[in-house]
Image (cartoon, rainbow, N blue to C red):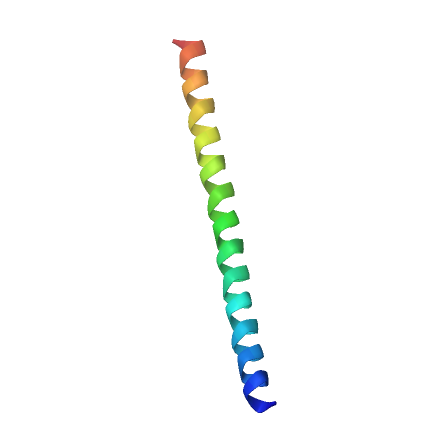
Length: 50
């Protein structure tokens, strides 16, 4: 019984790590998307005004 509790807590910790990792990944993805978007907008602005 104790061994199972240990395994369960280890599993929970792993799941939490994965969730944290995924949230960081989505933060990074949205940041990347925004930077690409602003870069494109700048390029577009440049094309229009050149």
